[in-house]
Image 1 (cartoon, rainbow, N blue to C red):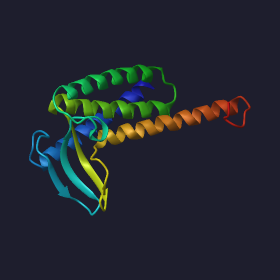
Image 2 (image 1 turned 90 degrees about the horizontal axis):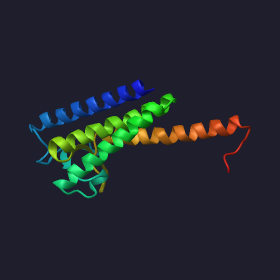
Image 3 (image 1 turned 45 degrees about the vertical axis):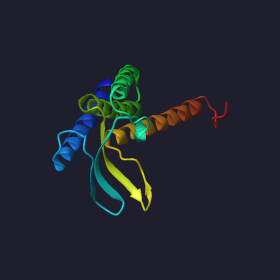
Image 4 (image 1 turned 60 degrees about the horizontal axis):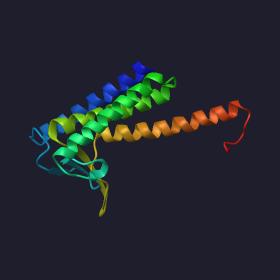
Length: 168
């Protein structure tokens, strides 16, 4: 399962890099210092923005915080790789691979640009969802798949023991 998870991680990291490079080329930029915006539909804007903080722009400060977040993410990636090396379930291996690949994509941005390139900006009327990228999507999907796998494996264990409910 280690190979499967690492393959997923590599694909996610590569697709994330390709999408961000395409965005930079689209806006004729080499980094994410200048914010750009282009309306695609009535509910989606393509933006070029640099998030130096954590998820959804929290703690969005430049400088040392970006390096600290990158180091923290690298530690998390290492922990996930160790976990992945022990996994036997295919769904969990893919889920962990999604998270690792997304984390690698965002860490690469932090080390390269001092922040993460975000570019998808959805909104409904005056309600806006914070801008995000492919790596963020992979991380969210990976965590959701981890939760699903955890629920499915718990249910299978409970049924294997002859229990019909999951209550303790």
